[in-house]
Amino acid sequence: MHGYRMRYSILGHVQRGVSSSAFDRVLPTRMGVYAVESLLKGESKKVVGANGHALHLISIFDSVQNEAVPDLELLKLIKVLKTFC
Image 1 (cartoon, one colour):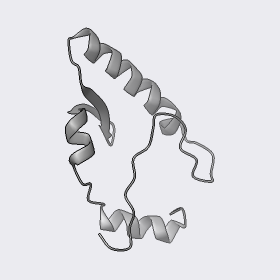
Image 2 (cartoon, rainbow, N blue to C red):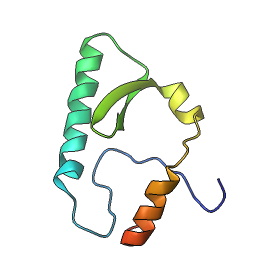
Image 3 (spheres, rainbow, N blue to C red):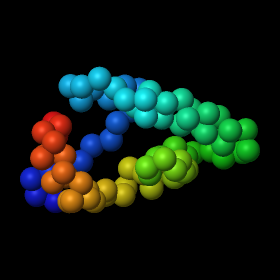
Image 4 (tube, rainbow, N blue to C red):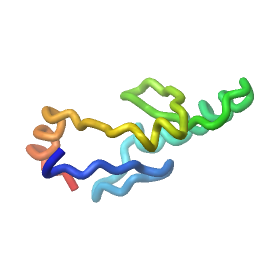
């Protein structure tokens, strides 16, 4: 997609130039718990993903091969709010 750069983030605080929200602070903990619970159920070679508040597992191999498509309406909103980095 021209004009946009897609990138992944590593668990932890993602610095956006503003204070982290409660969602930013709770999400990594939820993802860690979900990962451990999944390992205890026998899952392996997968990573935890989040879509809104829902967590899910995806194959490590699929996660690096899939090309994410941004929500253009959300990007417009972000630009209006001037939080786009």
